Image (cartoon, rainbow, N blue to C red; front, side):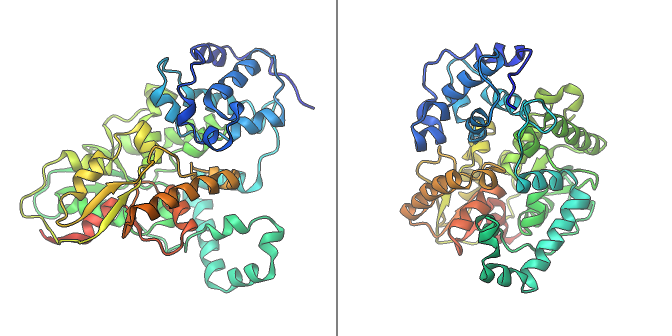
Length: 416
């Protein structure tokens, strides 16, 4: 039976009261753009959260649906004149519906399995990756697709979005620099990125080594917790944050570096979300931002690359990090390369962490718009700093050449 939220959540109520209902956020909201439904806009969702906190609305499936269809891209925060902490608000409201809460409703099996797997990176996630590799290479995938079993289970869309799962990277705990040492840095490897992308992390390590940095990779690090934070499990996210902070703060390093924009944004918000005791003792950088701020040795040269590259800007980069200025600066070092931002980069591609699993129809609609922008750019390839976005976009256009900017840089280095 549906139940009202009692007593009213005073923290949510206080934060929703910051909204003056001006509507400046509406043109920037992907779901409002698709639906033209006020309840699918930041202003509408804030009104729903406010009514929920006051006990004026029941925490039912319809209300949960409006909250769940938010991508948490946080484009609205960027333009809000009242500085409403919308990302914090939507996370708090979703936690009211989490398993175990009085207002909880059933969670999809794929989502719960995803959350449970990434939370146990060293155990369950590795087993999932091993199982997927076996499924893809044993002939079971072909059989499942031909038999119609996946369609019957409504898993065909999700299954088709899976990339080929590579062999495990088996990363070492330390990679020494080439030549004179500048400093050591620590590398956050992520969970989905490490499992699904066998190119970006090795490229990052090698490039940092070339530039004189030793790379430490603490084996005890885990998932960043972003998926849990945005899916109503803040305590699990906080627990994962503590694991990572403990793993990294024991190292003597100049910086913590991430290769995925979503993970890096989550790491940088640890202290603000979970308290200063769960913050890093050194700065956290997106790898492109880090490499754009240091001085490159004069002896490093790049082969010319006569291509047009479209730069995809993930929401986390645009709204929470430093945008794509660093990517453009780095790619400008490659002679003859023409790199331009995609049109409508301010619009989410639809990946949004687990959103492509939980809201496939809306995610697909947003992806179609992104693919149209890629077509219009007449680009030879695309670069993106977010593994989830990259997988989602490539699933919509198999064969699309899509790189992390760091992999492209390393590919073109000729001399050191």
